[in-house]
Length: 335
Image 1 (cartoon, one colour):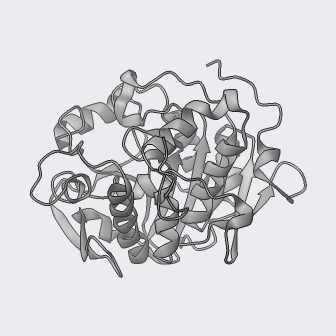
Image 2 (cartoon, one colour):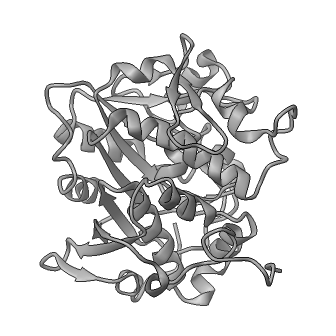
Image 3 (cartoon, helix red, strand yellow):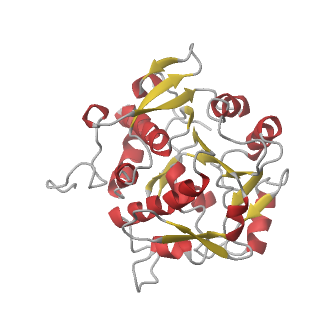
């Protein structure tokens, strides 16, 4: 049960409705087209600062072996062939021991999951580097894969879903945990000082550490960054859980894109909360029980973006719509 004294914005188990938020609005684009063409349609609205003369990295979760819910590699292949043929997918090794713990095992998993059509740079393969965390509470620097700083642009292609520790996994989690290297950065995020227990931190501290890690990366890339979130196959489990993920019961929705990381993650959460009770109860419970909403409020405190946005419907004359318009007549998940 939520603490009666908990305050919105500070406590990550309390959802703040749109009308109670303040500040500027960013632009978020939305399409119901869950396909490679939908990816392209959304991305083309936010690619203006992705410089063709520089090296582009695509950060996505390539998944544990045979993971059933990741963005299909065939989608990404078609997307890259048409939009970013010279880009490189980037990943890091995991902090937990498993099939992506070492570079050798990670590369075997990449082949199993179909990531063989382009270069995949495991950025911490040859060590780490430090990026500054400006105005951080927990960190002055974040340790990331040393290869990451050779790129000029970053496209954050995210499978939006639940997360066993973070409550939900959006663009913030994709970067915050996914760009931190597997031995140092991820350890800093997941543990208390002096502790080796990576599962012992699950509330506001974890959400704030994830967000500070993300800030280090997005400050490095500056304006040369774009975000695409795919709301499909949304288990309450992260793709880190692979075939052990909880069954998907939340309906598929669509694809969102923005140049504002807070706005796109907030819009995805708002869409979840706009669903009917029978459609969103499991995801809401996962988000609130892990205090995942603190990701959003802390990103705002750090000046990483806006939690208010104009949602543009790419399927219908690019008119402004609202989260409730994205969830009309959703079909139960049946894949």
